[in-house]
Length: 92
Image 1 (tube, helix red, strand yellow):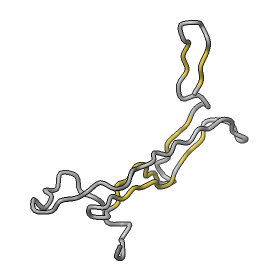
Image 2 (tube, helix red, strand yellow; image 1 turned 90 degrees about the vertical axis):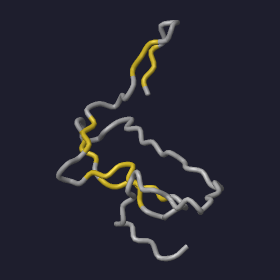
Image 3 (cartoon, helix red, strand yellow; image 1 turned 180 degrees about the vertical axis):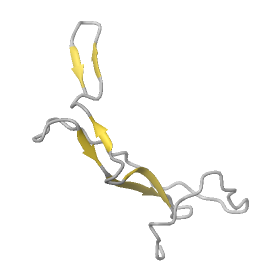
Image 4 (tube, helix red, strand yellow; image 1 turned 45 degrees about the vertical axis):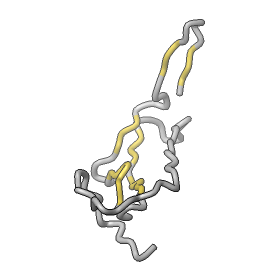
């Protein structure tokens, strides 16, 4: 792999080279973050960058990109809250 510029964004909808055949050899792992508790309370401001890169053109595909001036706000520790058929409460 050559030198990669992480600031070069992938452009969706680009026409790929019709002659080039790309084989799939690797997979992508999706990482999740669960906030179980907070020492500072809620809401929490989350900012930063999570990116992925494919083997076709090695450009960055941003999965999460928020600056300190535009954070993602987490208001509570529970993302999903439901009861199953037996009445058991589930919090994920």
